[in-house]
Length: 153
Image 1 (cartoon, rainbow, N blue to C red):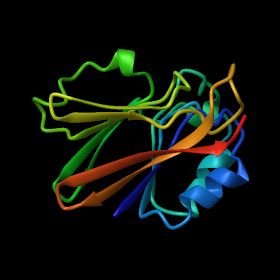
Image 2: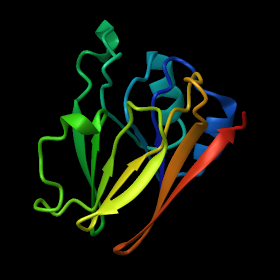
Image 3: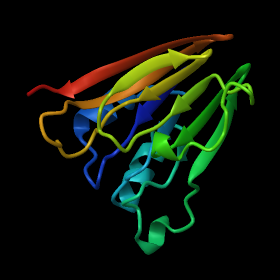
Image 4: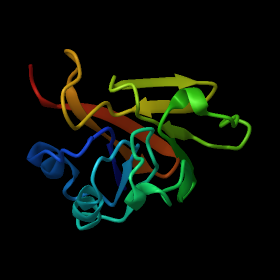
């Protein structure tokens, strides 16, 4: 199973991101979406789970959840926009993966048996940070993460 990860589009859904996410079994957007049509376009590719980002303040985003808990077979995934607002102990709850956004910095680290992944920003470039997306390939209990730079320099 391939789970596509995207975050911080800020109203810009690049064709490179759509190409990367094509063929995913599920997509998770880590917040700061920017425009509702982005959700429509992503949902046309695969089932979509989204969390509200700190910049998602328009009426269309009001009812988006701040967090989401998903289960893909034996793998539990928790999504939140800003990792600094994480109020649960993922390991204690049996969560295997935490997906976040907000910082625009792609990151992937494992701590206490929990994989923390931020796919970075797929929208407008911030500072000199890359434009990126991520994926999780799930095979039973095995989780293979990958972050991909979509646009160089």
